[in-house]
Image 1 (cartoon, rainbow, N blue to C red):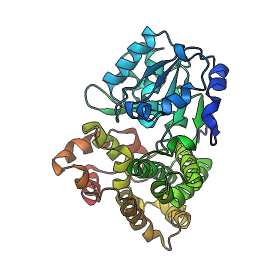
Image 2 (cartoon, rainbow, N blue to C red):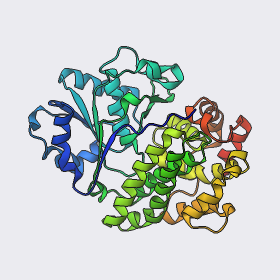
Image 3 (cartoon, helix red, strand yellow):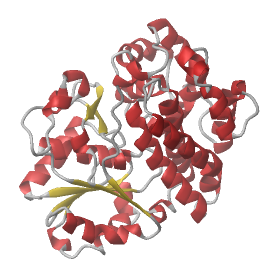
Length: 379
């Protein structure tokens, strides 16, 4: 049976950040804590939020979110939240800041260690409606975490795990494309490929959710058609608007499930937090598309044909090469080896990938040997 939920509100427009005070009032946030990172703060984006808040002196700021949020950072932010007696969170940044804010929202209102809320530890049932409210303001167009029901975090034991619950979905997503105008080109490309991968993978997933598939295909069209313009002409308003929408649509859709691209990216990201998640996704996507092509669920629904039509290539067999060519045009790394991945990392990565929640929603469940092949193809 399919369970289909779209359970949050989205404010999407240029200048939407001006709505932050009204949204805080709507959800009863009088002393919010902003969760962000040092780069976003240095770029002046936090000031662009604060200017619209009435009681700036009552707003806390945690700006030490790492590129891949880990347990130590969650605990540090949690201590600040409790000390300041804040009543909710405003996540400003990319997926890392939003995921960290979601973890704080859970930890601040529940007892237990962070690992106890991970999906692989049976944590879904432990997260309740008591979770502190989160308002999400993305400054990248990639993860879609502003509308996502999950958060990816690295535990103290090195595992990269997902926290998953409808109760951690932000109460509202304020998606203002203007906040992405000054994003560096390579970050625009990498986060944009993250969004595009979400659309590809959720469409390929065999779970029954036809509305999600429609959203994914439309998001893929927007992302594919505009990522190069956004990367090369950063103040192109139309391109930035479509990329912001593609990012949000990818996450609205991926409640249907992701797949082997993400199980592998999560695994390597847990081993080396310096590996950018969106870039890893871009490296794995061509090989995984080819790997999935022969699956009955893909063939019966003509999924590769529909993907080919969406991105404007002639044949289903052209889809994976088209992704690889797009990566090259965007100036992304040539493969995993160029990112610093080595073959001695494979065994641990495969062990982790086979336990990842995304492993189980790929249309073709990979064996250890098949994961090895996917890693080698992506080097």
